[in-house]
Image 1 (cartoon, rainbow, N blue to C red):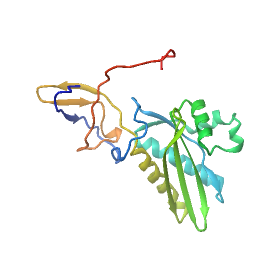
Image 2 (image 1 turned 90 degrees about the vertical axis):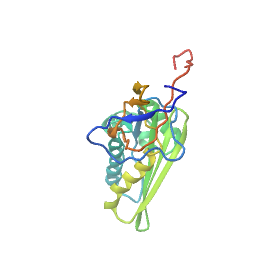
Image 3 (image 1 turned 60 degrees about the horizontal axis):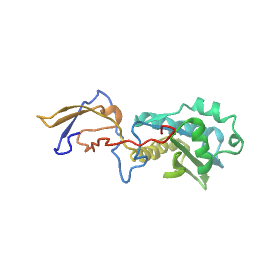
Length: 212
């Protein structure tokens, strides 16, 4: 906003929040200018009851919602739309299928994955697919030794995924004399006191004939 000066960001903190960490490592979806639209498809299963798999898919969605970093497509909406598609019969476990599903659901990102029983342990693995780029941008996996540990495991893998998604907000006001900027983000967006944020200003915007 004021490129020649260093501003301290004053964050208006809301009463409640969560402990989602700031972006770690290389950010995924660095081009987003608002909250990411994301959908979770049912997990592929191996030696695991389908009901348990669907329950963990729900837990993945719930963890995404709790992060407040993204907009999550409702599971009912996913089932309603995907039910009519050919890949509903064969499952959706690869990048090409995830991209097709994402376009149908009007989502920027799709989470696919698997839940497998290997010996006496459960392996939960997820992949996040960037629909626009048609590529996998993040993978997370974990193993647990009991089915009751799968729900916390779902929160764990989603926490690691979400930590790489940028927090997007706006500078709503600038007090130049005090070198303070007010931003439209708070605890409900996963921010915490002491975080360091980057402030960018749009210099120019190029669009094609379709307006994108």
